[in-house]
Length: 589
Image (cartoon, rainbow, N blue to C red):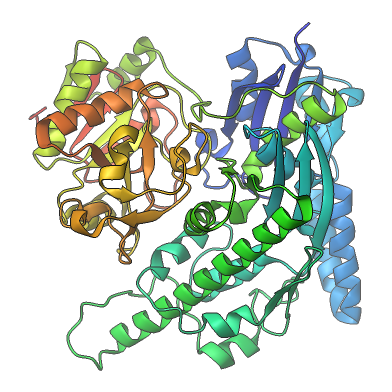
């Protein structure tokens, strides 16, 4: 009888559900894709219902439902920290109790039981970092490996090192709150004017414009012991909730006032004394310094994990594992192979919870490596046609098949159009991997500003990824070691350098430091998207496209045809390929 396990994450950020049947991932999705609320933390009713519907099962068919952390342990840590503040902690305790009761965070099992109609005996909890560890190792192809988890904070842990061998996980080292590399990076995310738990990737984008002038001083704040424990000097940070900001006055006294959210970031103004330019350079240097320091710590910590475990192959998860620049360096600089769980943050904890239970509690054998990130919702031709009809769209052309879509879309992109591309199942994780993507011509330098300003409505320093045919990628990029189906480059999770002689040919995807967050596209995994890139290659001689996620700023990636149509209508996109339908704004499709 098939063993079906549902993993869940919710209550803090990035709520998600993942369904595993006999160790095989059947479906996985974040709640934000259904609700439209970015980083939605609420109980993932829609994501759960999708997973069950995809597997065509009832809740009673579930062997187990596993929650990705232990709420009471997390609340215990909050109380301990508040009590350590003395009289000043009373307000925090009252606020925490009020928030937890209002959000029903004490009633996780009851919420699950009420929604699914299953007994409490079928509901379990595991530790937050156990979920991350399991998501990384059991998704990897490795029999034995060092497993590293790095994030803000779970219950108490912020980082762990585990030895994986023969399907068994053994934790060897842990770092506990408030010593946290994830919170360190988030503190500077706030200092640089971005939203914590959302804007960290913007820091990476800004970093490419600066010089790591403060990196050495920042690095002195963090130590790593031989037994794999991180220590962060605390005077510059406030992680206990006693203030609204995660950094102290000491940090602003050292680095100057924090950057105001939405303030101008520009190097192009006239005159060296221009205050905007001066501030932009300063904040870019801070971002570069934080990024460089974080990369160095990650690599040193991962190296310590390899030494502690005696294993070179490395698995990585936790929110810090989404740092694609650090991942690229690990792949190049450390021995062994690297696997990064595509949804490395809290959403991936849902998958890890299910995989942990299947392999550890049920003692089941390992399943195959994670190579297919297309685990979300998909729509039939009839459903797509109904959405088009409901939107009263006029300039719609029904094309013969997906090959015809690829041929026409490639022609339009060659002519300078920006298109939305909506095909198949939605991607699992934060990256658009060719099924919910906005695409443009990488040969045109002006596409950076066009897509950022007129379509995504976002900051001008934000970079774009090249989606490139895997067999042609080495012609353009200094690839990291290995391009296996599970490599980070398959999930757009590692950067590499563009060959200098190629930067002029593909300027729209080259970041300020000459790097690119490459996405290797395989015809066997995504034939429709690969077919589009091949058609563009035939038309232009360039086997790649500029790829960014199909969403507007502040919104999740589109999930449904209705989402795609609304986004298309509200931005400066020229065309939308929705299944086998081409929708145009100017009638030129």
